[in-house]
Length: 234
Image (tube, rainbow, N blue to C red; front, top):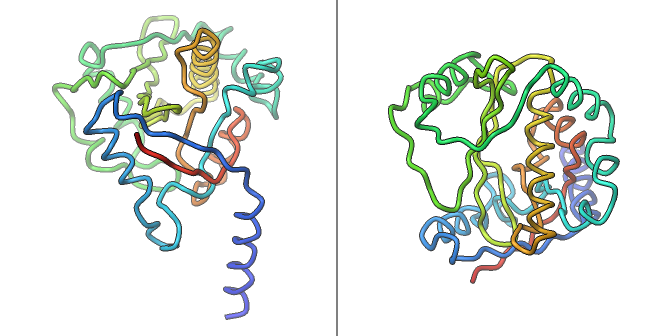
């Protein structure tokens, strides 16, 4: 009982210290899906009912601040992230925007390459091979390729308003820094778009709370920090 109270008190202190990010859902990007995501993000947290589902410890990069500073130092200058990014570049990995329907087999091979990730079995939706992917206009789809042209990782990013969010980020497990390269290149792209007046202000990668230590470290290395999100819908 005492330990539970201590943990709850610590959680409340951690929450109180979190910086606040104002994230605005904008239905002009996709009316139905944006509204559905707003309902999901603001629905009660399954464990802490008084909070929204995606309200506490949201993993964000403030692209406005990142773009105003030396980007390399701000994003990949932490821990060994720069080492991994540079390793991937030296080994010939590249990032490109893709049509997933051109890579159906390769995506399935990535999805089933491991039985579990982050301590959890792969969901059935990943194990089942899709023969066609629906392309949504407020999403972009990226793939990382090795120097032989093989797809080794992919990710999907949705734009929901003044923020964009990863919905999938998955690849073969190796030590080449491919996932670090993918996130880093996308952050660069979004910062350039923000400077040009068309990009999002924040990039989200789910949350910190509940994530496995390895994933938390990965996010921190690449410049994500925990925030308390305040949502609106227009």
